[in-house]
Length: 277
Image 1 (cartoon, one colour):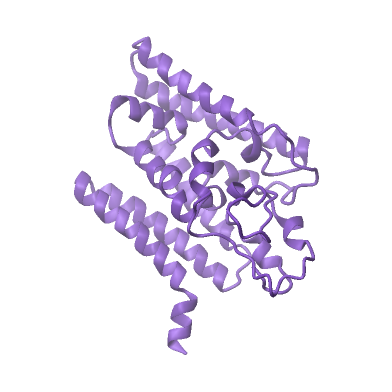
Image 2: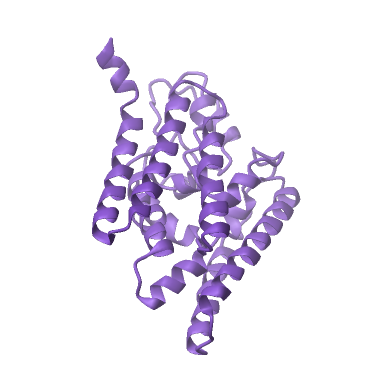
């Protein structure tokens, strides 16, 4: 009985161990206690959410979104004045410093997705944290073919930071902080407008968000994926109707429809009448 219970929560422990390993390695290599606290906190928050989900608590994912999203937006962004948006990543990359946003992107958005795919979008993004409170949790319109806009947003962020360095603008750190504030206001504004225009809370994620340019290629090979048991599946289509990202989770191949869009929200798992997912 004890072994069965341990196996039930093994995934929670696994994620906690992964984040604790990252926390300890960065603490020792960077000689900065902050990284021990930072990644331990995030790992504990995600593990708690997975534990609550296993216990069938309906708001498990929302708990993680608030714990991680508010921490990164308010504490890291506004209090510590770190630009954790993509502009901050370019800034640290150009300065050649492996700190703050570069570490965050490496763990959560570049190499991390090989393990947990687009889990960042489902559990930690502070933009989606707000957008998921809007009324259109399930898309009410077909997906638009305008995902190419995200590549323009991605390019503009790179051009913006590159221009600052090429022009040798002074006080770039201060500019990055204000870019973080203005960028977040713009993201929230555009995200809310698109959600109501397309009747889809995740419209911003699908069409505008530049972070997905990093996330999509790696998430194709993610270790943690929603899989379907074909022997249990009755092809009722309920998983497709509740999926906020229009993913065909009944197809277990890496080429499944919108496969790199899955945010591991587990709505399909919770709503499957036969427990096939």
